[in-house]
Length: 86
Image (cartoon, rainbow, N blue to C red):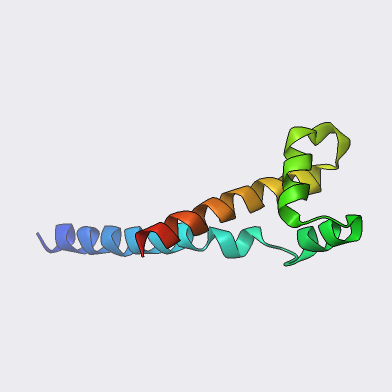
């Protein structure tokens, strides 16, 4: 009986850690904050315009820029959802 309770407690602790990891994915995804915006400014356009250009023609850009554009799209969507809840 005591062993079963110990296992349940261990599982509960593991679930809490997994939830924390899921919430921390954004911090791990952003290696160089501001890099995508800097690329856009260098081209003389906004980051939203660069995102649209990259996602519409991914073959014209390097893999890192495409990933940054996808990440921006995801983060903007999350921010909109968060604002609509408030």
